[in-house]
View (cartoon, rainbow, N blue to C red):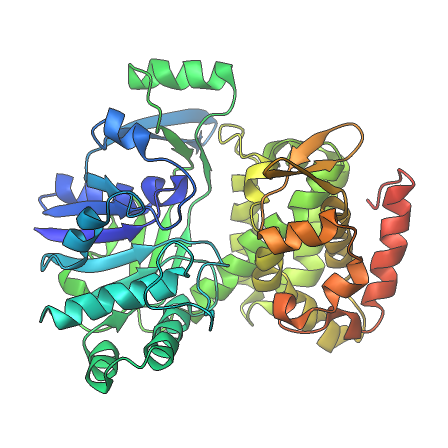
Amino acid sequence: MTKVLQFGEGNFLRTFVDHYFDTLNEEGGEFSVHIVKPIAFGSLENFKKQNNRYHIVLRGMDGAEAVEKVREIKVVSEAIDPFSDMAAYDRIATDPEVKIIVSNTTEAGICFHAEDKIEGFAEITYPAKLTKLLYKRFEAGLGGVYLLPVELIDNNADALFDCVNRYIDLWGLPEAFKAFNAKENIYCNTLVDRIVSGHPKTPEDRAHLNALTKDEDLLVSVGEPFGLWAIEDKGNIRDYIKEGFHGIDVVLTKNITHYKKQKVRVLNGSHTNLVAAGIVEGAVTVYDCMKDKKLRAFVEATLDNEIIPFVSEDTKGVRAFADSVLSRFENPYLNHLLVSISLNSISKWRARCLPSFEDYLAKHGSIAPHMTKGFSYLMYLYKSVKKDGDKYIADLGKVSVEVKDDAPYLAFFAEGGAVKDFMANADIFGKDLTKLPGFLDAVNENLALLAAGKSLL
């Protein structure tokens, strides 16, 4: 039995990674997924109620025909809450059958905090938790594992490896462990691509999906049929990961850069640039945006002028991928809520949009106009937040939405912080955005227009 230790219980991992391993089992493999909740927030109660089984529904178009494919996922063996059951966590952490560790802790999850203590757990980062786990395995005399992070940052496994090394140094762990981590643990950069809208939000949609699954499934998740997992071909990864189509298309490659750059900039970058604009303009889903003439034109102009020219020299190939992305955005069956996509928008903008923005600036000597509008909508949304109990609510007049991001960012705006100071914080964006020529002035002008009730589109 090959055990997969999965940090994260969210919709994406369950509709993508777990779908893949479940399909491998159907094809004769022997895999089991062991979910670990990486943060204290949230509950695993529904996993217990359903004996770790759930359904995914893949909705899309097959030509002119609407398709809804239902699959029961049986590969999950357990869902562990280490914050209430550390014994179960310690047991799986030192299980010799664990060969793969997968994680999805969002773009903000792979980070290093010098304040983290080796004695801590709830308050330390995912890479710090991982360092402790890998050290336990080392002390137990176990072999290495394959680490397949799916967080959408460039060279995600390299970044994770760097964080683990920094914690080894910070905590003064043995040099032998550091050498073991570098040689025996294989960190494979990955890229994932499947739009997952998650659990149905409306009573009508829930009723429809309950009819499809023949029962009420509290963990049911909706995604699109398309799925791609590109994984860096390192070590003996082929002993565990099979290429080809297995519920999703899997590619093992020595050079993942092109896949990563194309997907993050074209799909995720256009998503992130759109989401705040769509919310402020009154749209609810990505499909709504694609059916709105102004918002669709905004998406297409951003792609045509500010993203596609800077992905690779194969602009024809990138154009074809962008066309497929637009088609996927138009999938009416996903019900992909903008507020769901807006989670952690600040770190997403830095990872997904800023690189294209800078490429445009380097070539043209001026700021990218549509990305500037997208960022302005984002700042307007965050400027509108007020603390309401343990939530942050943006009051946009016609509609109020809950904004979810790192608490310090939301608290900054809820307490009246200035956009200029936020943009100038290099710890947030990796650089002082106010130094980009004309950017702050354009954002301020756009914010004034939005405050006056006008559209930027």
